[in-house]
Length: 282
Image 1 (cartoon, rainbow, N blue to C red):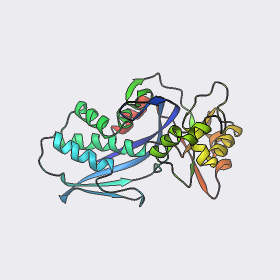
Image 2: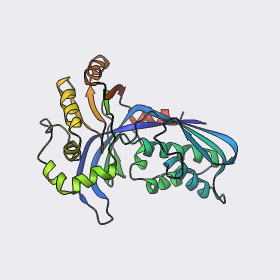
Image 3: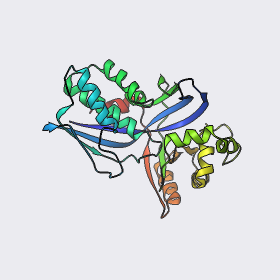
């Protein structure tokens, strides 16, 4: 069985404060994009196995795919640890890039194991919410408003298709660090620094504190705006920066302009909810 795990960008991300449970209160708009990882699940005798073509990606019980297997195995009424399954992860979504790759892999794995071990999707969605705050979004796809931890979801009218330039710095940013910078004294100073949003442009509240630590992100945002992006920002907790363009030609021109020896860029496109659901189900 082969399933695809699509990336997301955050068209906006507002951090409204810290919750009593230690998480942050968020208001974000998720958007699916066509960039994806591929997960292949095969029957194989012996203990559960996970391999990945990216050496930086953990292939052990800390990976959400592994955790998804354990949870669905138990939900199917099976005893002990998962077995007789081998999973191969072909990684194309960058690690620590703010594109939701780990969460999307987890959701895709839940769907795959659910089919294999006959577990209802309602149960799978519940497990997804326990695995991570972003995982529930990847059962929806398209343009979605996320509240609370980002896991209270309200599907929105899908936005028209646009082409997306992703600029990937050589470094990543962990979600934990990004929120700590927002919380801390450095983040307090950062809220008045970094490239400001254009008038009427959606905002990512994590961008400025992250830019204090990694000024290159601010320079990339500025470069994409100058290249004609209708909207340019860091996605999620970074480090990836995206720019939206009406045509593929304009997007590819901007991608070439934004690339450098220390960062790469690629062009993809947005997916509406219908496209997303069709593709994740194939």
